Length: 177
Image (cartoon, rainbow, N blue to C red; front, top):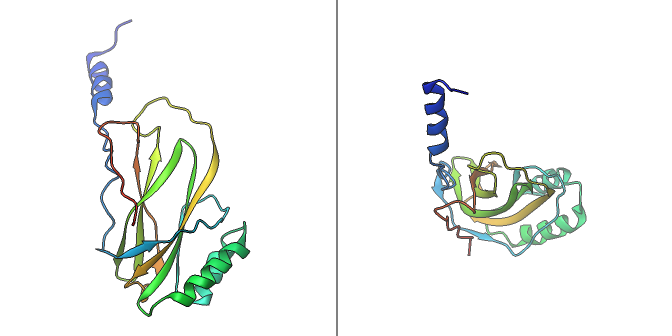
């Protein structure tokens, strides 16, 4: 069987295109000082979402979006709200995992105008690799952040990048300290 030359060349070139395994560009805004708390509340919504929490109403909105263990999450948020300084805000985030999405890391937090954007890097073992099937169970990862200078913000959005931890060059991801 013979293939037309342009088709064969395009298939060859497509196989040689390098994959950007950097996690992409950071979100817009200024890098913010933050603390990643040693807490992993359960949410159970299995979606990518973030909530800015400064008031009781903000806390209630986050709890409504989480069908699992709202009591444990509520207790954690109550304790953290009581400790905030006047320029701080809590960001509660959740990322969906499963299938080829095997893990995540927090690369940074950025504030632009009235929005706080945690930069999450998902580790996807199918990224840049053709014909991969993954069967890991669905899961989630959650985190609580205390973000300095974010009390005046009105919302939070996740900024998600993708890497494949199995591809070269290896990408080093530094979690918040």
